[in-house]
Length: 471
Picture 1 (tube, rainbow, N blue to C red):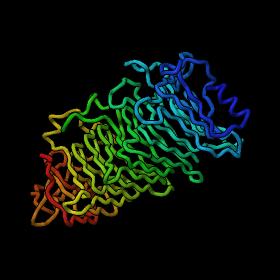
Picture 2 (picture 1 turned 135 degrees about the horizontal axis):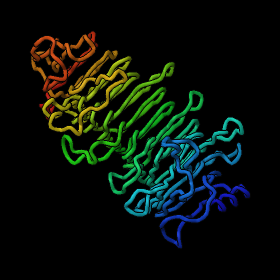
Picture 3 (picture 1 turned 90 degrees about the horizontal axis):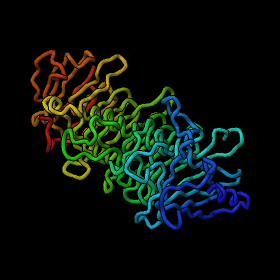
Picture 4 (picture 1 turned 90 degrees about the vertical axis):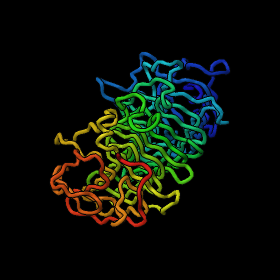
């Protein structure tokens, strides 16, 4: 591959295809290479059933137990010269029927001792890298990249898109991690897909084709900042649970966060006909926050968030729309605060109607595998065991939402207020709950809505009783 790219670059030949095989078939690639192999000038690298693993003497991304940049890049996607704007493609069998391109995936059942990743960033540790640390000096920047019919896993990060980079996933599936346990892989210390741009050079990622993206066995499934991400073709983050509560494989859970949405990021995740899945994370299914001085993130989700040890959705900034989504078997369904505008609504009786559930005290006692085990920086656990906890968001539009508890007279779920901020001195303020005075959230068996501090405007029109309950 190194020699092929040297020839392409010497001729400045655009839109060439490099076919990679081992005696006409697949297997472990062992030819001597100068890693990372540069990809540019619109080249397509086609390698169905070929496995790329770092050689044993290659530093594969971890130094003194910490993931380091520039240590495990298999392919670098970067301009050949300032005139090079062509899209690079990495693919397995173009027909989409088998024949994956494997990066960091072993040929057998044991994890690879030395794995690669893919980066689209000037400083990321990945099998594919798009960009270079000297981009600001030599004037060469990332190129658009397509990855399809591929399976990747890396110790530090699987695919990273950096400032100015753009990534298209599919058509054809892309798996990051163990593919729901089909292969044993080294749990990533970084994440599956990161898209981290800059204020002046945002990044982009989107998927094309049904079921284009599946991620599991990583610390963070998808991480976004200064990035526009559109993942709408039934994306799936996390291992598939076997059934109801406490049914995630591989207890304790190794995946921490499904999706982390940061400053100035925009995410569209799933759509009505291609519902997304976020499942079997320990800390949060979706975490939405931002840094200081950055624009607020905007998130729209259509799908299911389930079997999360702490919070199905945890949001402290921006705008979040969970239209037509189901949140179930999470210790706490949704926790919002800060300057969040939360919309959960949908049309009653329609496919767009959202359902928000939680795990009851009884279920938590009988299912230790899903308990929240993440104390905050003060050593105090956050709210647990409620469908929705509101710590001061701007508005909660929950029109048409189904709840685990519903009061027909007030036409709203029971609402408890916890003015102390510690969730221990709570009182009933609305609905059919009985005000026992000073009751603790952690002692209640079934909870619908908790409010910390002053009541935020709620809109519950068209809501009702969910088919499942927290009991």
